[in-house]
Length: 104
Image (cartoon, rainbow, N blue to C red; front, side, top):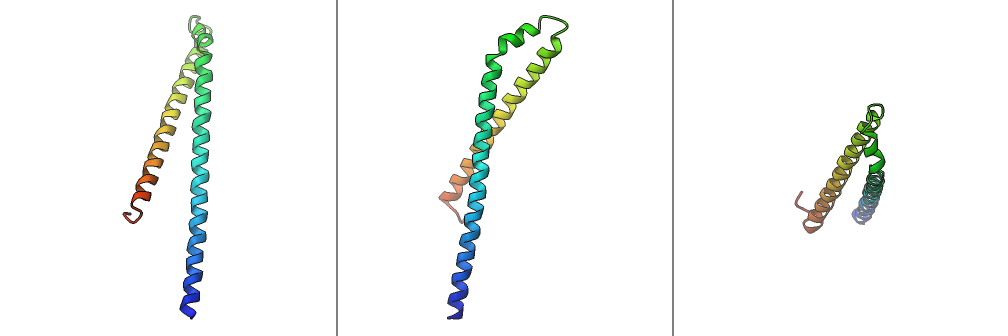
């Protein structure tokens, strides 16, 4: 009888810990999705303002603004690619784990 009670308590504790870990994982995945969406919107704004930035490259006094805009655009493209890569990696890892959970 005592082993049954201990088994039920241990099973409940494992289920609770699993639920907490899944919630933490889901929250971080949701944050990564929002960050990728934010990068996508910011990249759209940078592309939309490109004509203004291109006009800054013609003058010697505003060349620093042009260089800063180019660095900002390149950085946002890099971060968006990294976010997409991490999302793809995460979904493939979760998919392979769900397909065969005991293959750790």
